[in-house]
Length: 256
Image (cartoon, rainbow, N blue to C red):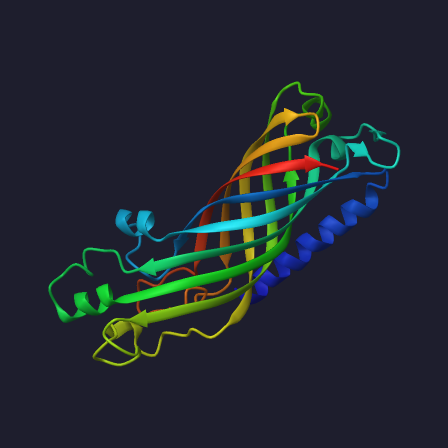
């Protein structure tokens, strides 16, 4: 899986660089900021459990930069009218998100030693990401910049380099022993700093506020090539996927 995601990252980077070189018709830049709740799907809690999904939610913030091929900054004019120029943008993004993680599940509520161990454990996922997306706008970017229509939906795919530093504590004492730690977690807790890659899928829309600014609403899915982004990787048959997040964010974009 590591090799496959790294290959995807390199392949997407190659595509973006190649298309940027191909579209040598001039371009302009956009800058923005995004923020919103992050739902962290990890090994804390139970899979598909509603309490876990609604409880393990953090906050993310990011800076975004766009290359807009529909408009040329060097002449303050539109570029050549091609499908690429009028329907694609390249988005570069730097983001940071933090989520407090708890074992929110019926198993953790049980009046047993295992339930007590789960209730007493708390984690914290701190994640820094940087990467590039290719965004496709089904409607004309030129028409949207002129305010007709005022809404522009888009679909995006990208790859990120990820640096993470998890934390894990228990009110019962130090972890990784039979007294404080749930059996399937013993020797499966690693809070050392690490790095990995992520594949990102994004869907959203822009709303035209003024000729030089947009409101951005986005729903993004980040799948990590690691099971230790949250610092926990239980060794059992239920551990079927790596860590991932769903990030709903709202942002402001300004045209330079």
